[in-house]
Each structure stands twice: as structure tokens, then as C-alpha cells.
Length: 149
Image (cartoon, rainbow, N blue to C red; front, side, top):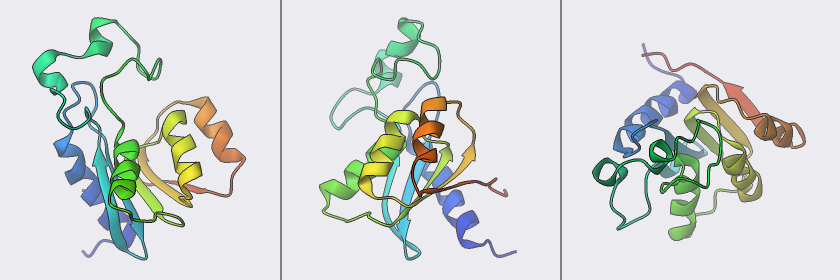
């Protein structure tokens, strides 16, 4: 059966996340406008930095719980990498939709708001009350959808 557009882009997100080098969670993001992919991203360290799979996870070493102290990580989130990729290549993402397999955290949410993204479609919940509070004050459409495998 042919997938609808949201299912289609969520399926692509699940391929993109396979490039992740994070030892704790694989996340992918795809930014789309007018049914065209503008940028993709997955969570991992910046360019030319040794991957965590080679040097170990700083968050594990410091025993940092999930959802806390985001700055204590060598990597970037998938949403951040997708937004940065668009900027690096001079692609406007204003008015776009971001698809991700995990609901964006508060840091990514702030970037999404300022980047002018108008819709978030995600698969799995991520408990971040600040992200929810920020999104509630915007006109960004947030949709929780399950990818049908």
C-alpha cells in the first residue's frame, strides 16, 4: 500500500537515523517544504571529530541521565544538524515541516522556532516540559504519528 506523505517522510527519517554515531539513541530528522526534502540530519559529533563509538560516550562516563544537561555531550542532535545543513548550503527552511523519530528537546525546539519551521511531525515522545511550554506559545503545528513499518 502506498504511504501518505507523512508516512513517506517518516520512513526516510528512519533511514537517516541509521547514520547516527550516538551510542545511546539514534535520531534522524528530515526538513521538507512543498513535498521536497531540503535537509537531513542525524545525531552525532561535528565534522572531523572522532565518533563516540571510538572514544566512548561522555554522558555515560559522567553518568548523565537522559534528558538532562544536554551541553554535556560531544554530539549535536539530528534537528540541529538538519538546520545547520540547510544554513551551510544556503537553503531557506522558513515555512517548512521537520520530521523526526523523537520529539524535539527544548534546545532543538528553540532552534525550530527561530528557523521559521511551521510543523513538527514526530514518532516517539520525549519528556521535556520546557519544549512543550515553548511550543504552546507558538503557532507551530505539532503532530505525533507512528511510522507504519
